[in-house]
Image 1 (cartoon, rainbow, N blue to C red):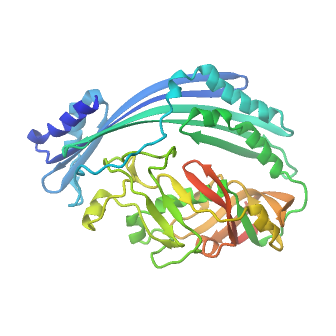
Image 2 (cartoon, helix red, strand yellow):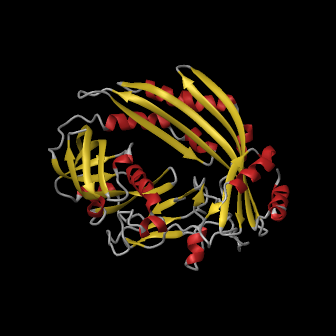
Image 3 (spheres, rainbow, N blue to C red):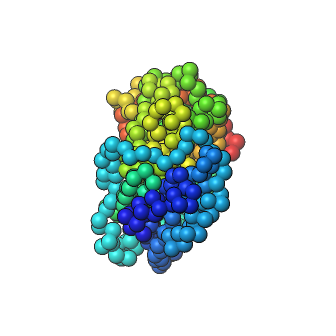
Length: 432
């Protein structure tokens, strides 16, 4: 179903009592590869999904998803699913569009062979095998090409094609207090990134760091250094909290009158060139607005639905994807000095945490955080030991309310650019 046909069908539903309609078609082509010992198993697949949303009289709306070749049946289900909804909802009118989706399509994907894909996995596994006291785990690769088409009864017609490449692997490391597993993931819009970044060496390097010989730290208050990866993992977990509805309901630990550290400046940029979640439009055909979520440590922008935007006479933010309102590409402003230089000036030990593998211990509503981590014991900027399977706990209003330092060491992890942070307000314990 090409865009022209999609547009015609969106306009042809009025005889069925439809006041307005939006049609979304998603086409996915994917290739996956899994390394099992020395053998790489490949598989390919393709899928198509058509979503029809209709608006009827009485502020009723219905949505259904199905195969494009079952168009009539999908429409019938959407009509049958119609229920009362927000009176301000309905198709979005044509907008003055910005250029979007820059750098999200890699034309090389069509020429990538199974050998190229297999080499990425084999190289990563070989690097792990070459490391001391490190046993390789599972390694997998996935690439996809996604084409999205959108049409509405208000004359909006949009199309975008993007690619994503993801390689991930794991390794088990030995240590005196028990084995531990490390996971690594590289995701990009371009094959060159996953093909050249040394995933296996990353695993080996991180294993060496958290096996650093030396003494640990006593239980109690601890200063924690979050690497760019750990900072990105934390703020990626917090991202869905910045919705207008959640903040209004008091379901997010940050409130409009609350002040965090004034050096915290967080931006959501759905049009970031080459960003992992960059897009020209969302599920409702709205181009994403760049939002400042935290300005000088205070709540500023928030993700807004079409209905909420119309109620408050503002523009919808363009952040509804796959039926959920949430962040796109997040960027946290960095500082001016390196973490190495800043640590050299601090008195007393710090605990450097490179990975937050499970952020489920962070409660978005209360801000209470309790995380099991591995880390490196630092004296000034020198590593003097390491600790594994320990718990750090704190209240994020305190941890983020008075940072020790925001560093200029910045890296991209997933869909976020983040600097290292030197934080306080944590309590260290050996309870897992």
